[in-house]
Image (cartoon, rainbow, N blue to C red; front, side):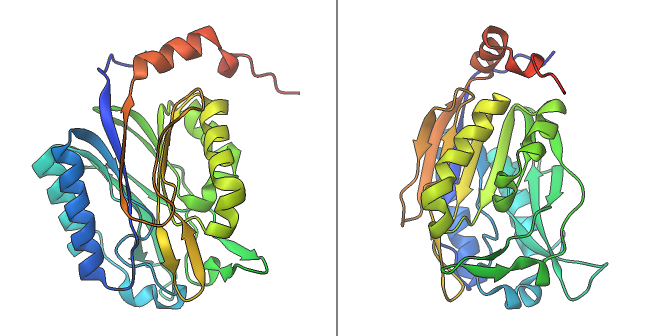
Length: 274
């Protein structure tokens, strides 16, 4: 049984991160403080928020767990008593020194690390408008991650993971009530698939999905889709960000309503494996 948690406000922060880390971090900090001031208890940042540039340059902008970005995020979580998903950050890989890990870290209200996740699925695609081989620069993770927090049991995924429903089902089997999804989802794929996939993952697992996306340009040629979303377990879009501008979206998370839905429509208990 999950503990009873009163409804609370969650926020997804949409950024237009560029290649200037100081400016990116300052913008993220300003919006985190704004979200907390407006009452948010759970805040999610987008993928690669400290540096979003050409992948070939990720290595030189890699952070350590005790580096300035995570240190700042830890301090903000503690100061404002947040559960803060620090989007994702390029972290130096010790196993493959020429690559980075695409890591998402969740900090608790005391600044403690609640969970850490390295993106499992690298974005290797060859569309006419979007060509990128993320695996040339990013070492794929190998472990799922979820954590019990004061605001519910959260699971972690990053961007391209959204296309792999087995990840979300495994997280749900492990107790996930809320999925935190930092992303830099492209505009080309996002126009066709972003909303559909977010709502599908929420519906089929009866979870809240908080998806914080980037907007603007990613490197020289890839445009991000924006449209950050908070989706409830019924698949209703509770909040949606703009297409091209940064900002914050808010929505109430009510885990009692989720429990009621899972009781009235117990699809998760009806699974039959052929």
